[in-house]
Structures are given as structure tokens and as C-alpha cells.
Length: 318
Image (cartoon, rainbow, N blue to C red; front, side, top):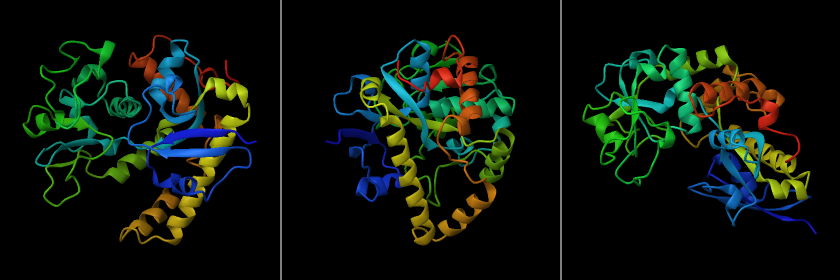
């Protein structure tokens, strides 16, 4: 009998073929849940055997010697980070370099995306010591909780008293920019209160890609180590299913392109600007990116000692 594997992912378009059963496995019965919030701790979560998982949290856990989750270098979420820096609509700032000496808000210091965004700023001359960082909830609808942890440094990296929403602080002029993975409500309207900081996102992000050779990986596939030991083929099978779903989704988007008026142009530009295989899964295609992330996590103080891509993604569970 095939084992039943319970997998949690965010509601990414590319997971639709897998969710609908257009992609199936002969080796397992997959129960896919598309969730708004990923499991806080896959290792102890009773509902799932595998999950989309933060690269940063997985990396720092491994650095602490935790082995209850096996990471698979299948990057379910990849994203350039220049687009994640927003400012007030009337701001005069237009480049990452303009943030030197400025006040920046973000909703989680350890987050994978924010780690990559700080790395992008550093490439443009804005290191951690070159800005003032406020860590807090994005909006009043988000809960108040500890988003900075042991990385707090009064006067440099801190949460303000009362945890005021950082989007409100941006509009009040108390912050110059905010890091956000998803755009706030109303962002895409003509009367939006916010805008992307960088004026020409495509040019900036393509320049970044040409310099580093990858689109930053944010989330990976995580599998409970006990399941990986029980079914040694499981991690690769799940990765293959995710890849198959991604390929089918892209084929269908290119055929049925009228989901927005100009998505067909975007699909064409992406294919011309990025080399084939830019989103390939596996250790070797992503070795440089993984090594850069480890180096950044160490440099930014998220982990005490560096690792290697091979120790971060072992071929067999401990």
C-alpha cells in the first residue's frame, strides 16, 4: 500500500496542478494543503509530514545542531528582493543606496527574505551599521509578538514601545522605507499611498541576477527526518512532484495567458531575460546561491559558525 503523505504549502499558482490531482505519484498518496500560514515547527506539527519551510529558520536550526527536519533544495518560493522595499508615495528616495543612514522597518529580522534584502542593500553600500532598523508588525491587523529575538540592539535594531505598525510609521514620516514580502492593501491602486522604492525594478533585479547568477531562494521543502528515514526515496519524490507541477503550470500559463492583459508580455520577457533552468531544483544548480545565503546568515549574525551547502542539505537524514 502507498503511504499517505501530508504536505503543507502556501497557495502558489504553480501548486494548482498538484492540488487538483493533475500531477500524481505511483509511490505515495499525497494530501496537499494550501495554507495561509505555514507550520510554526514542522518537527513537532501533528498535521504534516512535510512542508514548505523557511530557508533561514532551517539553516539556523541546522547550525544549532537540530536534525528533526531534512531540508530539500527545492525552492518553492524564489523572489528578487528589490521589489520588497517600499516607501511613501511622495518620497524622494529611488535607489537602495539612498537608504544609507535612513530608518528602515521590517516585520522579522531573521526572515529569509529580509536576510536577502539586507544582502542586496549591502551590495549597494548599505550595511547593517549604515541604517537604523525598526522591527515590528506591518499593520494593526497583525499580532504583536517578538519579531527580533536575540538580534535586538538598542539604537540600531529594535522594536518601538507599543509595537506601532511600521506601515503607519512610514506614512507618518518616522520611517523612510519598509521591507514587505507582500504588498499592502491598496498598493496597486492609482491613489496608492505607497510605491516601490526602486524606480526601475526590472533593470535593478536583472542587474542583480547577472551579477550573482540566481533568483534568491526564500522557502524550501522540508521533510520530517523520521519520514525520510522510513522512506529513503520520499524527499526526491516530493521534489519531483513539485517540479512537475511547476512545469505544467508554466505550460498552461503560456497557453492560457489572458489572466491579466499583459501577462503574455511578462512570460516572454522572463524567458528572454533569464536562462533556461534558472529555477531548477537540486543542490548543484543552487550551490552558489545556498553558499551565499549561508555566508550572509553568518555575516549578519544569524548563526555563530558557517556551514557548507553539503552539511546544510545532507544526502541522508541524521
